[in-house]
Image (cartoon, rainbow, N blue to C red; front, side, top):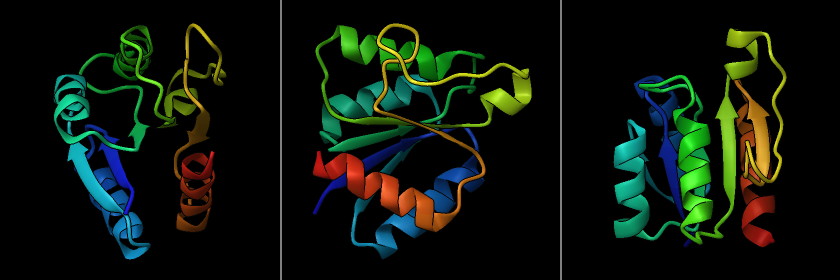
Length: 123
């Protein structure tokens, strides 16, 4: 069973992701901010991270992804965020600013979330 870490400051998003992913048979752990998320990557050894951008700081998700990659963490990261709607700017994955494997705008329907998670875990 694959373990997924969801890092988001919105408890409704954490709960929704947890319900959808656990129904599909995944083990899910959650963190409400970047610091908790970094600790859980080290302690819980997830197979995939689903990460929000704007948490306590406007760029927490970007910083967390950058820190993970700089630390040599290669597991897949999916950015799940409404940062584009909030800022009016367009973001997508790239090697430096947004070093993630998938970028998905919120809201995301459960079918899309499950499909993207399965694809990332299969790679």
